[in-house]
Length: 413
Image (cartoon, rainbow, N blue to C red):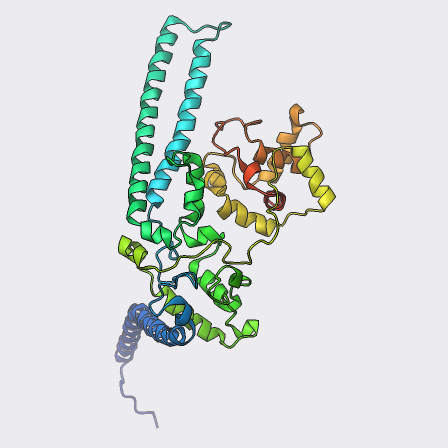
């Protein structure tokens, strides 16, 4: 006896199958379309609960030193509800404008020197027509120089004005050691740019190459060893994580970080926010104060530097060198993708296969070539690049270990 079918005709069964398949596809599509919104809502709920738990932990464990609203306490602990911590630089635009204008001035003056050399070449004097062209080109370059000088003057005036409105914040530690960097009439432009590029944000100030979340979490886990020597009104920042033998689980560390990071206002920080901070971070807040004389700078005696490294058994760390190269000394600004200097990538092979093949570098090692390029950048300029763009003061800014670290990093490229 045959089975009784709900849909007897083959055509009906095919149509039913198609209908069910289309319905399933519509259902799957509806779920897919709404899944992202559902997940975002879930993330918001999870983050909200994490912030709430972090707020409770902050109130019971952190507020005594950092303040109930996170603004810090004078000479006790830095503010965390703080635009400087969150990477908002009040004079960043002005500093960038001055730095870029100074770089442009170097190039323009170099171009004028080249044209003047051509104009006054007694062995191959230019034609009258070419002389007129050179004079016109020099006049145009001089006009561009005046424009760049005006950019610098305007940006300097704007920055001084902004700093004037933030004088209370500066007194509370924003831009520490600012008054020791410049002379009385504040004309030491190049030194000032270096200062602001290294102090515009907290992460730049401490040389942290990662993101802010990593910085906050790492600080909560490990504390600030030796910071009691910096914050004399407190015992310093102790470790809080069970990983370091303290009391907080990793999920609690993340909750605390979520609460702290929730203070971020993005691009909406104002002068009032700077003035509300009762204490900014201090130099050396990540370690103890030096008890002995500061190490001498590396100088510019290339062979003497290499001899000291050998005598003192100084070995460079490529990992530390990368941080110094990328963050502390800002080398990637020019060297990344050959923006205005030879590309970082390929450094070692270029030196071995091209530079050391030149007669003037006979007997050089790769290490010697890199050291000379850093401390005496004007002695040799690679074809296709302008001289004067690379600062010539790294010998006065680096100590031997820092230079050795940078060299070690470049020898991995």
